[in-house]
Length: 371
Image (cartoon, rainbow, N blue to C red; front, side, top):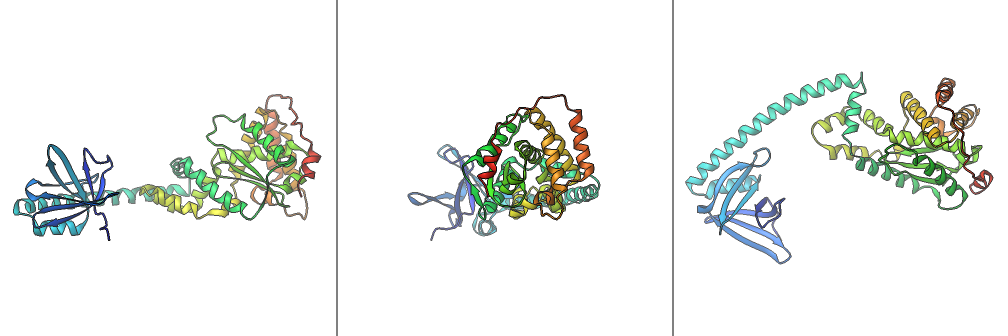
């Protein structure tokens, strides 16, 4: 059974990131075992060639250096058994140097722990105070989340949701929704996202966007809409939730100080793991009032740039809100009030005059193509 690597070896003929190896101490010196396609390769370095020190990014590793035929090598390890064996078997001049290196490591670790503990205490205390009175911390954390993680998070929830749905893969409905999405995305300003729109056979009057640009439109929404302008209004609104990273803000806000601490400690992978566990819950994520208004206003501006009548979004949301006794899934995550509708109408009135360009879509064919 091959030994488990416990060290990294560096040298001119080795990878820049170091070569993993198993290091041990014999009565004669340092023994290195490298694993390769040819099997195990063993090398011995006599004690007389070794120099002992501390190194690594935080100076918390044992470092052994030596020269072989004009080439310099270095071994880095934190393995306590290796250090103990070196202390027990090496000659006096090496064990004395090892003692100095060990003391240096302990001193640096103590200083780092003290400074880190004080810094975290101050930062967490300050951020805890800020958390409940400002969105500044949320914005800071969201800005630290790479788009690649956001896309991975959205894709995971997207695939999980679609696994239980009937996806409409072709036909008038798919073509119509894609045409609306293409027209809107063509008028986005410096968007880092590649939007992917999917239609599913589902009677719920709903549509939602996931982090990373994944948008799902339900057939029930297409059945309820009076024309493409209304659906385009919903798409413009949803796209801006993505562009403004509203879902990421809500996720971080819901995670609370867990998000703060994981970012402060540099544990970004831990943050990604916690977020990933949300999975399908992203589909029913509710946005705040300010986020809805922001998506409304930016959605209206997007529709205006794309020469789509902004009236469609306003009338559609308002008509749904007036539907008494109906379960409208879209309104559960995007509640429409008369005050919000009035703000939309006021904002639309301030936009420059524009002559809308019809989509040229046979809406009866679209509605007839889905159940």
